[in-house]
Length: 447
Ligand SMILES: C[S@@+](CC[C@H](N)C(=O)[O-])C[C@H]1O[C@@H](n2cnc3c(N)ncnc32)[C@H](O)[C@@H]1O
Image (tube, rainbow, N blue to C red):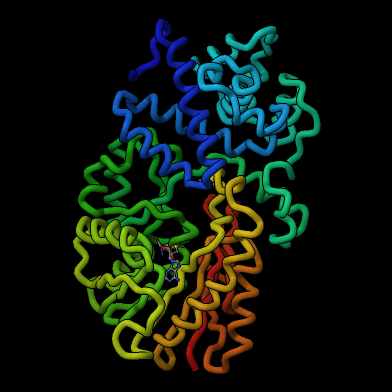
């Protein structure tokens, strides 16, 4: 495999169309996250070199990003997902979908996509203008795709699930802005985890990356469309940075952990926020990181070894009591399990694999965890509730219900990380504000 060789493009185009079909079909039918599916496929199929992996992964994500339109290319989805294995590479509906996914996100036709185009029977050549659809705004993309593939009525609203407006109450113009952001390929944000962030940026630039420090969060660095695998950089292996979206870093900013404090990161997962809190505390004090999933905590163990942290204590926790004595933490963070709808730009597959019922199932567990977390907060201590969801029922509604049932907590003000205005407890970050994911974060204090 490896680089694209004109003599092998025909075979590669066939093989990739089959691989992409299997990955997308299986993600849609099982709801299993596509990034993990791809990672496991490439682990088992070592013959795929880095350029093969990149092209296959990018096409899979483009396909999900535009699935609301591309699904209209098939006569029916059940017909599309029941193509016999030996017909996948020549199936005309599937080839049209693959070609369109590439046209929508790229600024030039890739040699493999050109081969897919050649395999389409009776397919007209299209103008160079339409080959550069990737650079255009949504309305132009809709017009271009309709013209090439003769598919009617492609709207912005098709690009999110049908139940979306029942959950996300924002004005029409903001909805349009949000969907436009969801359709852009996301950049990578990292969080510097070393004393000298300027020197880290210089090191990354020497590696040929575009590293730009955020104007709003001191440790956040934007790496736009990296051409290198960040995990292979020496600066990553030595723990100088972690991959963490800007919006996620805002959660740590709101916690504002200080040296010498005790924090409980109740839903620590693989520990993105635990590491951030521990960094803020400058190795003084302790972060107790818990989660119901041990395998996620194992990831955190690896990360804290890489960053040489000694102030994080990890425990599996299934909802019983508080680690240590009750009310013994200066701060408790609930980075709650949620629909993750704020990450739909980065994980476009989730738009089509999450159901409306799934979304409705989260508030019960979110409120339950928040009440359990509250038991750990000492007097005048801080309770932070956060999600990467854009849906009201997982955010403001949870806080309203929590505050209404408790007279021992009140909202606490903090400064908006971008505008610097005072936020009276609840904050949302939208993708267009910082070229990031979306989050909700709320700061409360025990009175
Ligand atoms: C949004 S993720 C946390 C991400 C993590 N804080 C980070 O920064 O990488 C939510 C986490 O909640 C965990 N979780 C789900 N149900 C839980 C429960 N009942 N109690 C504690 N953790 C739970 C999940 O395993 C998942 O790791």
